[in-house]
Length: 221
Length: 256
Ligand code: HEM
Ligand code: FES
View 1: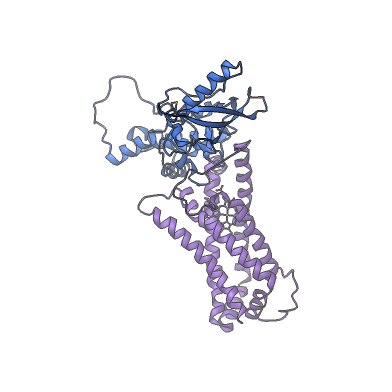
View 2: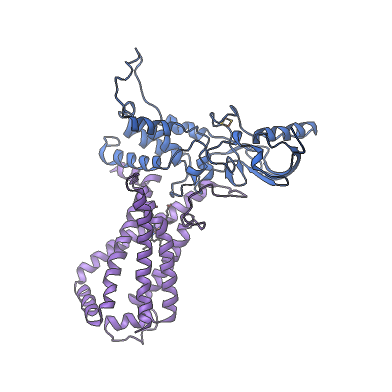
């Protein structure tokens, strides 16, 4: 298996892993959002979904382990690649200007992947602290059903601000991440390049707005 | 020539040798003709420095017509200056205005160590080529023309990739100092042609390995390289390299 280790530790191989883990995390986010959109369907449907999910304790653990593995691979490579890329430049330029003419945004989210990724990480830690680890004050939702717990957490002011910022980071990260992942995997062709570019952007926006809609909806509950 | 030329302030990176710390120095250059090329402007500066008994600014150049890839220079933070698909030797002073300050820096990359002033050592590119950027052909009679059919589209893709002059602007413009555009052009020009097929798996594996070994960064797909490339090499080639690499790892006999 030396060939595989060799391939995956090359610059191209690391970007393959980055792309695959990034897209897999997107897959998780879609399923996660789809489940949570059941909040709109009311307490009964949402609670039924939540209980059903947690009835399957073993399967859930397997899924969580897989997800953690994918996530930490992405995180580890993010730091490793960023460090290597910094060393590859060495002393930087006194001045630098883009020569690109077709910029979608002057902000160039592709140059901020580590920063937006770290923003995303901060949001995820807050989110896990809220829902999974219950690190913060739990008195508001002690003993409540999942639906009421979700509404309670989504109306907490720190969560509202933190989550909305997190979704903004998600949009920024994926506005480049999706199309970049396809390119890293070699999926580039005039037949479908426009679909990848605009579809990726649309997907990023849909994920961010879909999640944000839950926060806004909760304020009215 | 009519009227007065431009008065410019040049902010130039000076470094006496690879071990020297280096610093920016300012030079005032008056009456610069807008018809000069950028390198001619530097020639004028150097003549003046020589007259003053100072060291002239070292910079790379050869053909001065955009084909050899020797000229480099980061001009106001842009590789080969502000024009697209243009080398520094073909950049004209009419792109600048009277009173401008122009910052001139060398390519910056760990794999391109500075030799002196604005001259960097780009032999790392040569080693990437030696690692696989060739086709092995038996000596003997030349084969009949057209005995190997090449579809027109493939021929054009190969020619587009072969336009790379190896100047290193892609590395210079990339925030990661990645050589993916260069390497992918050199992989592509052969991978799409029948002559390049027999060695394609080994080629891409070895060239990528050498590229990493030289200390270039990895590709974040920012496309800055494509915009900086004086030969108009497209990032489509990078996707092709990624495909070639994946195919070589998964399906070829290399590395078993
Ligand atoms: C749910 C969370 C996340 C998703 C869905 C996601 C998705 C993606 C995708 C699709 C890419 C593009 C891969 C490519 O260019 O080939 C990417 C790249 C990247 N991600 Fe994430 N990511 C997530 C979390 C993070 C976190 C927490 C960090 C960081 C600390 C991070 C840092 C990066 C970096 C630095 C890159 C660019 C790597 C490069 O091009 O050199 N990501 N991400
Ligand atoms: S000097 Fe030959 S390309 Fe500029």
